[in-house]
Amino acid sequence: MQAWLSDHKLVSYLLILGFTIYIFNKVFRPQQKLPLLKEILVYVLIAFGSFILMILQVDKLPIIQCMGVAVIMMLMLRGRQLYDKWKGNKAGDASAQGKAEPGK
Image (cartoon, rainbow, N blue to C red; front, side):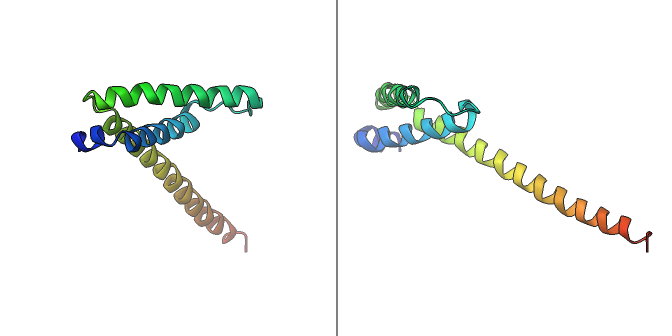
């Protein structure tokens, strides 16, 4: 896989760019929206940094694989948060129904 990614530099760059943007938006995104020029500057810097990471990927470092593991772990965390929220709502519904019964 590493050799194939080294041969296909555009695919490597796009994967790194996509992973980097996803990680930035999920981890480092400020709560308030940035002004437009700052937003553009952030994404230009992300694109430049992704180019540097692509060079390291072509130089046989497992950048894409490491970022892929990070994204998978973030998705697992999000899935767990959604599951806990869903289970909390079900438990809340059951306890609300249980509390309504004695008041009849």
